Length: 182
Image (cartoon, rainbow, N blue to C red; front, side, top):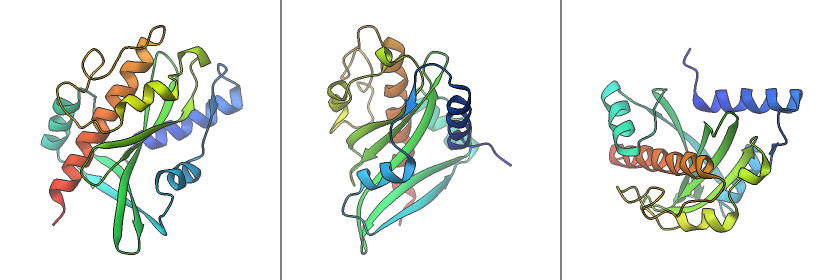
């Protein structure tokens, strides 16, 4: 059985909740987050993307984020037969503790918005909504990086870099997913 990043995130969240690691917390459970991502949806589908080794290398190259699983989940919001958009839920380690971020993307692959679902580093390292808003409308490119299109975050450099990698990885995965669709 492959261990997916989402499984790791869930296990980390459970462990952190039970043991009281840091002062972090879960801000939004998965189902509530997906409702926020697709407010007009009557259906939210789970689409599993199975990557070849070559595709894993390509996503790593394009995003700068390590792809450690050949299985990646993309959520598709629908109103009837109309696709409203896409979302990914991506977990990562910031400094020593985990964060979980949802990246919501439009039909064309541009970032719609980002929501931090859980953050277990000290609260002062958590990026503010205003900082997250700068991703809106951005697409995967060489300039989608801290110091490029994304401003740095004083006092939370590792958080800024982790979230930017997560957005880049989600964008690269969505691009691959859209290329495969008929």
